[in-house]
Amino acid sequence: PILKNTYAIPVYQEQIMEIARELCGFTLGEADVLRKAIGKKIKKLLMSQKEKFIEGGIKNGINRIIIEKIWSWIEPSASYSFNRSHAASYATIAYQTAFLKANYPVEFMAAVLTSERADTERIAVLIEECKKMGVEVLRPDINESFMNFSVVPQKNQIRFGLLAIKNVGINIVETIISERKSQGPYKSIQDFVSRIASRDLNKKSMESLVKAGVFDALEERNKLLNNLEKLLEQARENHKTKINGQKGLFDGMGFTATLVLSETPAATSSEKLTWEKELLGLYVSGHPLKNFKGLLEKKSLTISKASQTAVGKLVKVGGIISGIKKIITKVGKPMLFVGLEDETQKIEVVVFPSIIEKNPTIFQENKIVFVSGKMDARDGVPKIICNEIEEILDIKEN
Image 1: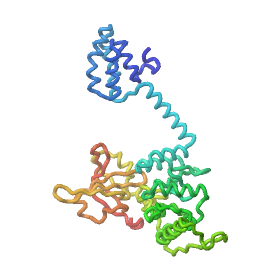
Image 2: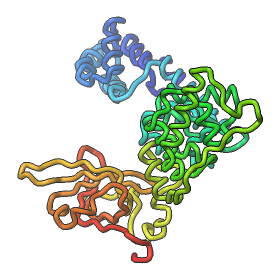
Image 3: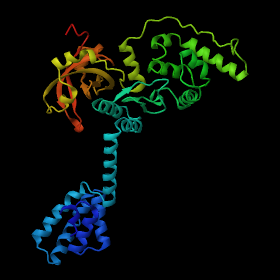
Image 4: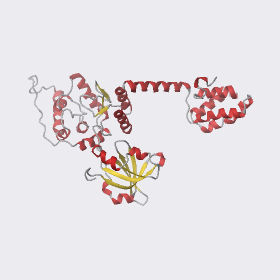
């Protein structure tokens, strides 16, 4: 009867306590020691109760083989066990979140992305999940983004929040959103700098907003970057005028003087992606490997497939260098731990001094390379011990 509701399987801590009391004569205090052992995953404490449990069962007339069998059901609880109220709560939350993901996928994923916003690796995984669900995650936008990730109305899309951009503080974000809510969307870059009279709109924050693509709907990124001082000067003048209570020469006449920006060659897609990676922590509007997809599939494994390869096996993967950590060995030579990523996953590549000496200039962030080497899994994490590295300079050359 103790296990009737769980189909003869001991699931909850309370059931194990009740078995110990009813079958083995444990007091409430003794049963609580058993609960502590399984609840806190203290294997040693659990095993110290074994003899008392078995002897108590025999004393109550239970066959030794049967009581030992019952104890064998309890032992796995030292690895994982909940009390009944926690299990019920987790089951409820699991059902509720599954329901929300199934019925409100865009809203659900926006909320999950917001809750994980500080972890860029987790964000990358969640964006990949969004793609599988047919939900597009867009770069931040001056007229659509809010503080955190948000749903784009009537579309199957999520916008990056302005707070996700490095070097952009909460004060300027609050000012931008508040002004937009009260006075409507920003119509041009001039409109923006004339309306934002905040001391927090400094060169660093403005540059970061531009590079992250916030103003893409208003003006081209490189043009804004090359006219940054002019824009900031305009913002400072407007701020000074408002503080002094002055009015512009053309105020009330239905037109404003136009801010003329110097023409500049447009930023390349590669530059835009590099800026996104730098300021958002990941590529949003595309991926540097997109044009190399066919070549990579033909000549190498994806990182996710390589990660499943047995330790010691030779693999060849292609990807982009996303980070480099350098240490000096005991003999005074450099050794590298290189972050390599493709469109599926990331992996660490261990590069010993002899490999670095063969081609020292290749180890730079944002270079696209083939890496050949042996799979390793020290500390339980897949790695590649580099035997050879080759830069992919051009699709045609390969």
